[in-house]
Each structure stands twice: as C-alpha cells, then as structure tokens.
Image (cartoon, rainbow, N blue to C red; front, side):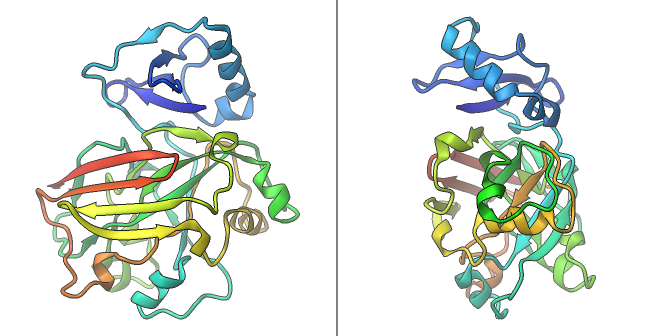
Length: 283
C-alpha cells in the first residue's frame, strides 16, 4: 500500500494511492500519517477501508503532494554506507555504521523547492532509501527481528552542504540540517509491498545529466543490520526515519565538483518507491 499526504504545506490530508493510480481520502481513518497512526494499527485499518471500497476519491488536479509522513520524531542517518561512495570521497570502509542525526524540520515534499543556504558554495545531492519505523524498538536481537518493526520505505533526498559539513565542525550536523534539506516521498510504501530492501536500484540526475546509479545490494550494512544496530544505542519510535546512505556520484566525488546552484533541477527515483523532482532556489 502507498500512503501519502496531499494539500498545501501545513494543511495536508492523509491519502492512499491505489494500484491503478487513484487517490483515496484517508481522513475518516486518521487525521494524519504519523507515528501515532503507525503505532496504533493504522496501516491495517487503512487497508481494510480500501478493501471495503468505502473511501472517497480525491481529484489529483493541482493537488500538491507533501511528505508522506508528518514531521518525524528523529531522522537518523548512516554515512559512507556504499562501498563506491566511500571510495569516491577517499574514506576507508567503516567497520561499524557511521551514524549522525538530521533535524526533522528539514523534511519537505518530494516536489517542493529546496533552498541553497546563504553563504553556501558546496550544496550537494544524495539519493537514499529511507526506512520508516512502525513500532517502538529497543535492543532488537538481530536483522530478522529488526525487519519486523519497519512500517515501510520512501525515497529520501539527503541534501548536504559539504563546506558546512566537513570544514566548519568535527560533527556533520551543520551541513545536513539546513532548511528544506530532506525532501521525502512521494509516498510511504508499506514493507510488504516493497519486499527485499536490498534489491532496489537508485537513480539521480542533475539538469538531465545522470549522476548516481546505485543499488541497495551494494550497502556495506544492510537495512536489517542498521535497524538492529541503532536499537542498541537509542530507542526507535514509530514515525522515526532512517536515511541509509547514498551510492557514488555525488558532486563531492566528481571531477570539477559541480555543486548545485539556484535554478538547478534534480530528479531522483528508487525502484518501487516512485520519483522526486526539485528545483533549487536561494535562501
């Protein structure tokens, strides 16, 4: 099932996208798609209403698609999680996941404008698989158990400012938490529909030029391992998002480091999860 939120920013309503592309209003089931919805069996209730044919249809004409999840409690990110990306940045293969946090306020819709920060000269792109947690989780006993707490998956654009990230602080947060730096969506695809999260191709183009072509099978630490690992050090709550890393092809690793400028367009997609497109503006 594909869950999404539609409408003007701050006024989104919950919806379901059917297999034939129709939008169904979920407002009778929940006020929003958030951690409380996921924790209380909301996905099962929504699925039952879809099967019953009781949900009214929404017209998609002129309807903005927002982030598929209301503001997450936290965004946990894993860096250097693809072998080719570690190599292009000159980093060693990490023996343990490289973990950092990203401000949940960075989340915007998949087609919203992304703002290049004032003073930025190194704004970069990163297509990623996002994991959305569906149950409160702590000290999970391995990858198999960890996969059972995943509500679903979405495309995440982990926009990064490399100068802020790598030169201004020993931590990465400054370059990861600028406003609008995490387009998410277009929908949250439930785990049962996605299947194996290690069998997904990722793509990203800038101004029509292919920059990233990766595959989740190349992750150093697979999804189940990441979720289990994180649960040993923090409590994962329903609605939390985990950005699982990006493959090679970011501006930081390319000849000439062609960082993003106002007016640039970025298109990204992940198998079975849809596609995004953003135009970059100036903050």
